[in-house]
Length: 289
Image (tube, rainbow, N blue to C red; front, side, top):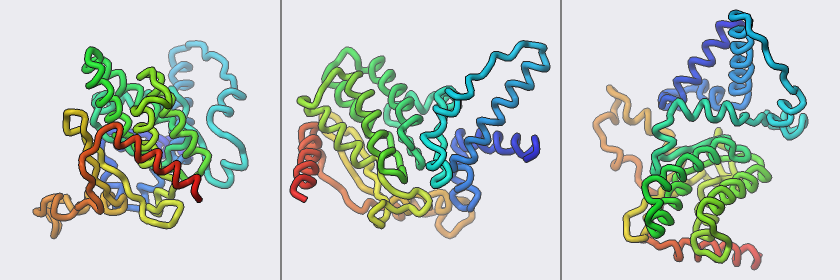
């Protein structure tokens, strides 16, 4: 792989993180740019550029602990071979999120990680959102609880491997519970568990199917005030076509989004306690089976 090809990948990476990913949804290239292989190549490039910059300015390069480096990127060689599973290190997560810093600090900004692993990106996004909650609503316990839950409602992930799904949900729940200083006895804890069970999906992002073979469906959550939340469910494969419908010069360019992207299900507004009760129902159904 040539240096120019690596630079091209990095520029594409920058474009994706600046909201230009919609055009990739219409091509096979998008699948590559969302793959672990692409991000691993970006990681190698960044390290190579760092080394080149140090050499250029005659600065000493600190030694790299290769064993620690490899441990942070993979769980096992077999998983890499079978699934191409390579995790993103924390420093790269922060560097990439800083490219869209304002959005990561907006409580109701929605983020989807289509290969979320154990939640490296989603955890850092949630931490940034909760920091924004503290600044804006820290003086009101009632509003703090509502907007903290909204921050987790706006975090979405798809993951192919079941153990990663469970780990991602658990990692996000720990961050949330520690910030709110709550445990399982609090309705807010149960509500967060239910939201994560819906937002972190066990499935295949490329095929846009859940592990059951059904189309992936995401819940769009919204806070309507006075402690009540709204939920509408949308199919992922339909949402992914949004860029082609809004492109200028196409047959559908003049149509409003509401005319094409309709929810598959709409729920009555609900409170924290009602959302928590839905998680209890899921647990009871699982025990019955």
